[in-house]
Amino acid sequence: MRLVFMGTPAFAVPSLVEIVSAGHEVVCVYSQPPRPRGRGQQLRPSPVQELAESLGIEVRTPATLAGEAEAIEALDLDALIVVAYGQILKPRVLDAARLGAYNLHASLLPRWRGAAPIQRAIMAGDTETGVQIMRMSEGLDEGPVLLSERLAIGPEDTASTLGEALSTLGASLWPRALGALERGGANFVEQVGESTYARKISAAEARIDWTRPARQVDGHIRGLSSVPGAYFMHEGVRIKVLMSACEPDHDLADGAQEGKAQPGTVQGGTVQGGTVEAGTVLAANEGGVVVACADGAVRLTRLQREGRAVQSSADFLRGYPLAAGAVLG
Image 1 (spheres, rainbow, N blue to C red):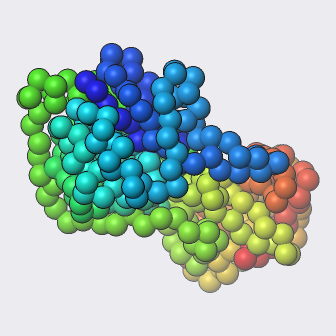
Image 2 (tube, rainbow, N blue to C red):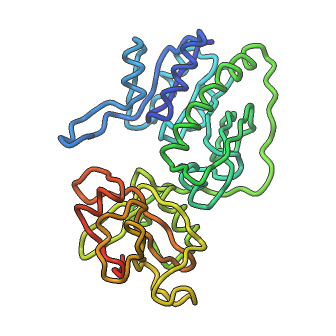
Image 3 (cartoon, rainbow, N blue to C red):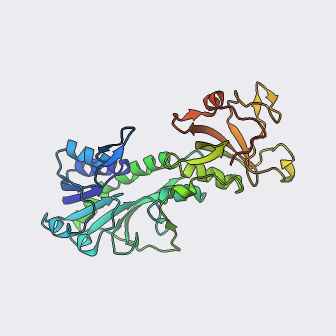
């Protein structure tokens, strides 16, 4: 089939690989313009652009698709493929290909329509998600579904790990989907059920709220790992948390057993078999930093100070000791 592929981040790369490997003709790739990246903030192409250029495929990177409809129509396409492109497609673009436009979405629609379905699923405590190929319509992620696969969300999944798994799983659907379209045997299923909206992640919501239940705090941390990264403040220092574990039944210190502990309080852990009392520096606690929440606690296991590399809790505490009893903001 003669196709245009629209995609930008690393999530979309496996899909382009699968489509090309299946023998389809990708005549052009659309991707977001190069952005400043890295320490030097130099302009760099997107992962999809880099791959497409390495394969000898023409790449177009317009800031918007306004005025592109005619150019896309001129390509005489069978279908238009979209995977995390990052722009809204107007009706004329959606209708530019003979068989329509198709999108790979990382949720089980209609749950989590919108920009951040992977992050929102983890943050909401969902135990299952998936990937679906749908025919695009003018409504946001409202089109009928062609193919779907489910995937469990585990207690150690982060937005990064789950995104990688869904990227690979979703890519594997394209040869089947395009084959069905080519044969004229595609079977579409309309979305049913209550819809939820996965709004874009904002920097303002990244700060950890310790007054929430432990399960919600843990989901918040894992759902925002690694970008933008959930964080807390301690004595004016911003510290990101990239991984945590929920401990809803943790036996909290300082009267917390009766639910009186101040949320955000660093709890006594165990070092070399002994209990850490309040005021003791947790500089060798291999098990992580345990912090009280509205109920139970979370154990912080991977942390990052501003301007530093991500570290295990043990390495972090050696360079930035926290004391049992310290209150995190």
